Image (cartoon, rainbow, N blue to C red; front, top):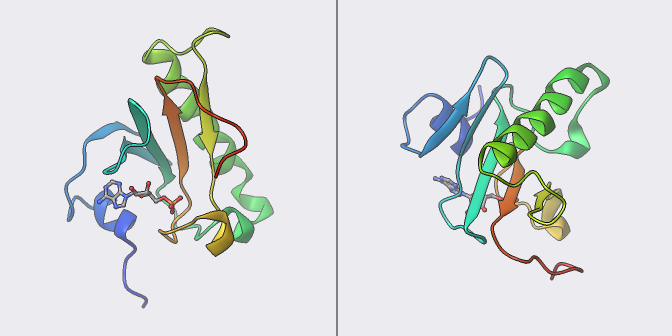
Length: 117
Ligand code: AMP
């Protein structure tokens, strides 16, 4: 068996995190190094290392992550066109991935620039 990922250790409560949401498929918690006033990670409980390694039968889980992120954004008041938010998935080294457990970044609360660095 491989070592549990950092995020599996958050799911199991071995490592503390500021958990904002949990259900049977996912968990969401504040990023430890926030890049915006609100920076939340939404992750599947099932270990999918990255979106590039997701399978067709992960469809339900992947859709669920986006809907949880949308709900969190709405609950924080970022539901209008003006008060928007951004969802990001980094994949692999060039994509900026540092934790090999799929996660959707939810960023909100400031004007975000494009293109990203
Ligand atoms: P990525 O670079 O897309 O793989 O994103 C990984 C994210 O995990 C980064 O934004 C980190 O700040 C965040 N992170 C790393 N360790 C922790 C932790 N213990 N609790 C919460 N967020 C973390």
